[in-house]
Length: 167
Ligand SMILES: *[C@@H]1O[C@H](CO)[C@@H](O)[C@H](O)[C@H]1NC(C)=O
Image (cartoon, rainbow, N blue to C red):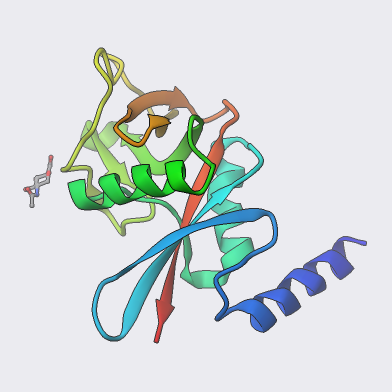
C-alpha cells in the first residue's frame, strides 16, 4: 500500500511538477529571484512534528523542496500577506529555524548553514535558555500581525514548504 501511495505521489510530482497546484497543500504564491528560477511557497493544511515536516517537504516536492527559511523582511511580508489571502491565516507554522548549541545561535536548517540574521521574534521570545530541541515557528494572526516563537520540535504544527523551480 505504502509503495503504491509513493508511486502515486512520485507520478503526481512529475505530472503536476510544473503546475502550481499540489495535493494536500495550499499554494501561497511565488517570488522570482531572477530569470532562471522562482521560489514557490506551499502551506500544509495538516500538522506534524518538526522532523516529519522537514521530511514531508522533500518527499512531496522532491530535492527542490525545503521547509521554509524566512531570510528577509520582504519574504516575511509576502508570506504574511499570502497566508491571509489564501485562507491559511491565523495558524502557527514550522519554519526550518533551529537552535544550534555548539554555535549558541539560531540557524536555518534549510539554508545551508545560514545564520538567522533577519528576525521577527514575538515579544518575550525566544526563550532565554534555548537548546537543540528548539525550533522557530511563525505565529500568523493576520496580514499585519505575526511573529516568531521558539517551540519544541515534538510539538505539532502546520508547516510551509518552499520549492525552487528552475525555469
Ligand atoms: C549573520 O549572523 C552571524 C552570527 O550571528 C554573523 O557572524 C554574520 O556576520 C551575520 N551576517 C550578516 C550578513 O549580517
